[in-house]
Every structure is written in structure tokens, then in C-alpha cells.
Amino acid sequence: MSNEIIFTVAKESGLDVEKLKEDMGDDSIEKIMHTNIVPAGEIGARGTPAFVIGEQMFGGAMKYEQMQQAVDDARQKKTK
Image 1 (cartoon, one colour):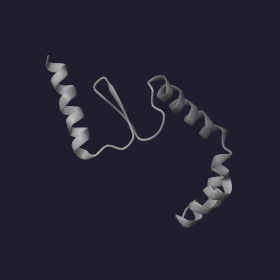
Image 2: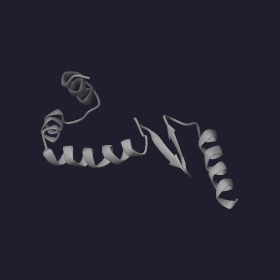
Image 3: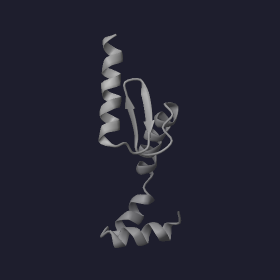
Image 4: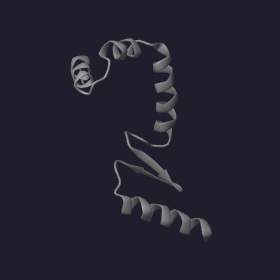
């Protein structure tokens, strides 16, 4: 995605585009991103959203019922 598209969407969303440009050039933001991306990659997360429920990784959006079932399954495995 090009920066121009990012800036257009940001403007349409009501964001301060100049502040966004400033933040995009801030090295501390890059450090924060790296701090999150590295561990996420190590556990197999390839995008957002990603959920770890019990010992399972779930990538992508989940319906409420799917998440509830995953939680129920994890709890059941824990009690065995």
C-alpha cells in the first residue's frame, strides 16, 4: 500500500495527516513495531487479528460462537 493511499484514507477518516506523517518517521514507532512483530512471528501469527487460546493459535476474525467453542475446548483440555 502506498503512502498516498494511507494518507488519503487517514484524511477521509478524520485523522491529522501531518501528525501521521510525523509519527511514521519516528524511530520509536519502528522499535515498538519490531518489539511486537518479532514475538508474533515466533508464535506463528501472520496478521491481525490473531488469537492464542489455550495452546492453539487462531488467525483471522472469529465469530463469537467460534471463540466461545475454542475457549470451552481449551478449558476442557486443562481439566483433563
